[in-house]
Every structure is written in C-alpha cells, then in structure tokens.
Image (cartoon, rainbow over all chains, first blue to last red; front, side, top):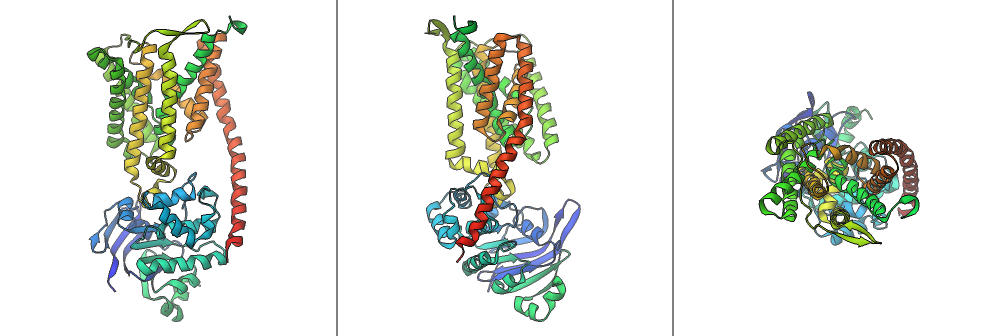
Length: 230
Length: 305
C-alpha cells in the first residue's frame, strides 16, 4: 500500500509551548490509522497542525504534494477533511446548511441523500439548527460532512467520545465506509472503537511517537495497557 | 393641526429619522456586528461617502453619480484597510480598536486638508416636494426611507438566501471550523468589511443633501450607529432595523417635546437600560433552546435500531 498521507518530523505548539516533537506517520487508502495517547499527549494538536491550523516545522505530503504551508480551506478542497471533537457546529445554521458548506454548494441534493441514508436521524432534522442537536447527532453530522465530500484523507478526533453505545454502533459502520475509499487517521480514547475499526496504531506520549504497530498486536502484547494506563 | 400640534410632517420626520438611524447602522452591522471589529472608523467612512458625493457632483454636476462613486470609494478604502491592517487583528480586539481610531483621525485630517473645515453642502439630487394631507414633504426625505428599505431587503437576501451569505455566516459563527470546511475565511472577511464600508459610504452620500458637511460630519453618526447595533443585537439585522426605528423615531418625537440635546440624553439612557435588560431575555431564550436539545437527546435512543 502506498501511503496517501505522509507526515514527517512535525514539530508544533502554541506560542512558546512546544507540544509535538518530531512526529512522523503515514496512512494509506483503506486503512484506519489510530493515534492513541493519554490526555495532553498532543493528539488533537497533531490534527490541528495537519489541517493547517497551527504553524509547524516538518512536512505533510498529500499524494506526494507538499501541503505543509497550505491553509485549512485549500487542504479541505484538496480532499483532506477534519472531523473535530469539539466546537463542531456553526451556531444558528441548520443541518442542511452544514452539509451545503461542506460540499462547497455543489451537489447538495445528492450529498443530503447520502447523509440521510447513512444517518436517518439527520434526515428528520435537516431544517433544525445544528446547535440544538444531541451530542450523538452532532457526531453523526460531523461524519456526514466528511462522507459526502468523498474525501481522500479523513482526520477524526474522538468521533465516539461521550455518545451512547447505541449511537456508537451507528458511527462505526460510517468510519468503515470512509476507510474503503480514504485514508483515515483516527484519534480515539475508546479502545473498543480503536480495536473495532483500527488497523495500525501510533502511540503518542508527550508529543512524540513512542510505539507503532498493529492495533490488536499492541493491545494483546499489553503495550497499550502500559502506555495508556488502562 | 393634528393632536397636540403633531403634524403629518412631524409623523413623517419620525419615520425619516428612524430610517436614518437604520441607514447609518447597516455598514456597522457588517464591520462590528458580524466581524467583531470595534470599528471607530465607521463615521469616517460615512464622511468619505459624503465628500465623494460632493466632489463628483462638483465635477460632473450629477449628484446621483456622486452617490455611486461614494459606494465605490468607501468600499475600496475599507478593503485596503482590512487587507492592509485589520486582517491581522481579528483575534486582538483592543489593537483593532486602536487601529480604527488611528485611521479615523488620519481620514478626518486628510479631508480637512483637502476641503478645509468650512461647511459645504451637497445639492438635493431630486429637489422639490410632494403634498401629503395638505403638507409638503421633500421628495429626497422619502427617497432616504425607500433607499434604506431597499438596502435592508438587499442585505437580508444576500445574507440569508445566497451561497455567499451562508459562507459569510459560517465565517462569523465559527471561523476555525469554516476554514477547515473549505471556506476561505480571509476572503469572506475582506468581502464583508468591504460591503460594510461601502454601506457606510452610501449612508454618507444619501444623508449629505440634508446635512451641512464638515470634517466632523461622520462623528455625528458614530455613537448612534453603535447604540443601534448593540441594542438590536450585533448579528441580527432585523433587530438592528427595529432598534434603529425605535431609537431614531423616539429621538424625533422627543425633539418635538423637549430640546434636541435633552432628547439625545433620554434616548441614550433608554438604550443603556435596554441593553442591560437584554441578558435576561437571552437567558430565557437559552433555557428554551436547552429544553429543545434535551428533547433531541432523548430522541437519540428512539432513532437507534
């Protein structure tokens, strides 16, 4: 498998505080690469840096093209999308408008159909303001916004965090569906989800990658238990 | 003679002053209301609009052409200010306040250097008046109301019915999310500031024929436009229209009863009291929304297989 996303030696942080120190990883189409780590390890910072939201050193390549200095909107248009953990909606905008924005105003009807088929609760709430959705529905909306643009790379930040188990069962097939045609980088605290969908894992500790390998292998060898203090 | 000596022309003036308050606030709705820039140069953008109309009318003898030029000049100036300075200051409100304050002083001084501090007048583009219930009402004052109404409708359509408006609202509501959803927030911010500056220019040009111009002209409108936008709700154009009509209309009525200065003080006190009461209303709305979200959460389980 050729890696669609190549991240090499990324160092980034906030102001004078360095959070990521020389992080490298890669992800290919068809795989879900999990980034695991304790709170404060730098997982979300990594995704923010990849999406052009933080200044950084190092290189990010998308299909061989250096996108390290690109802004967020051009990265999105190039096919790399971000499903954030928090602050996921535009207050005052409806579900339909969220889907419209993700699509750049093109093919909205078809996109809405795809989103509605995958997440029926959203179909009933297209004209509802997204900020009034439940936590689970917001996660569905975030995933739907990613799915409908047929992305090449998806960066997901804890898509199942804080939602009911029944909703997690609806989200997992969507993550698998995304991975069929895209490279997925998944940040996840919920090990069950990581084991259910993940192929490889990178364990982040204090801003550095300290373990790499198959998710199940790392789990069965006790590495994850030790590193994540499970 | 109407009741208490209140003539139809006075009633019309209530409407006109209400419209003027709305008109001077439309630009600030974009620059301060949507973009959160404490835009102290708003008054000077109105000033630039007025003097552009004056200058072009002097050159061509066509005041309406001057008004079109006013939109362009103020909008272009706004674009230059936004791209040159303000785009670096969106996360730094105090710095943007100082920057707009400085730009306001520069523009005022440049206008004074170019045109002196002597009062100037812009001719009425239409002239004349029409008869309403036996009273003469100037055509241009009616045009101010009509132009304001058209601008409000135009802005509502732009912001609520177009692709531009949707992305502009997304940029305002959650810029970081918008950027990662493919919206070029830098472009939308620049466009919104330019539109806001252009609207200030229109206001200056439209109001110039019913005022005497001098380099302090813009300052007349600065405080009232901020009052209207804050009272109406920064991001609500409908609220701003209501606030403008209420504040401007109240001022016109009070001026009929008491002195102009005292009327302005009463309106100011009313506006401050109303702003103080807004959080109470907002809290009730918030509680209502919370109840809706809770009901929606309960629906999670109902919708799951």
